[in-house]
Length: 279
Image 1 (tube, one colour):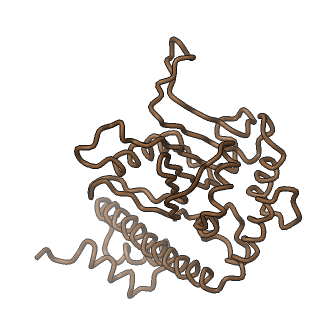
Image 2 (cartoon, helix red, strand yellow):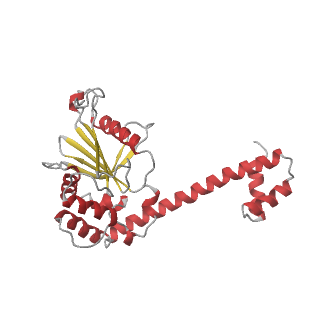
Image 3 (tube, one colour):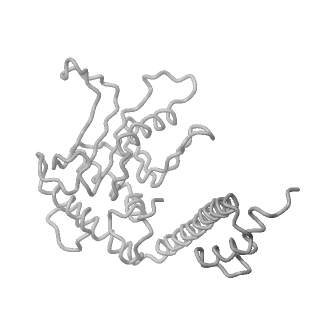
């Protein structure tokens, strides 16, 4: 999961937090009306719903983990919560589309068997800068925009902070709730349901334990990454000083000061990284 996921205590998590969003949306009775409100369509039923679905088409490919994956038998809905602009959402939407298609088309199947897909990013920022609530994309002919490709692929980017668009009052309330996790009474039954679900989720010990386990795992990865990065930096540091002809004793003194190492650790680092005889 993304770094920002673990920067809050569990009791403070909002609806837009990836962990919380995935847990609350695993309930089809919430996922269905939520997607209907977001897309402004009716979904007849849901055959399959999964939170944080992993997809890998082959061992060497870049796998993906989806926040919410829904299949109604004819259409696949992939919904991602995005609270930080990493600058890659456009290309990510393209990649997600390809992975979903490859994952769902069996060897030998006709391409006509590909289901319609909605790739949805719910952003707490305006990716395109036009102050719209909804940015919907389908392939069209450049020379004749009225001519659609009709390949069944739709990409939707939601801006919770938007103000332009023909949307319902309940949609606006939903945007406010996603953006703020404000615990108050809403006119929308959907938003009240999600608000109550968030309040209940913050009290669930099993979800809290799961979150804390993941948080500790993430911190361990951070520690290991910092150690690896520091060792790489230290190796370059020592290498440069060796090339300049600095004596071993002075290198050790410099490491103690610049890296705040003990003498023992500095000596060990020098011997391990550069001065240890090759086997």
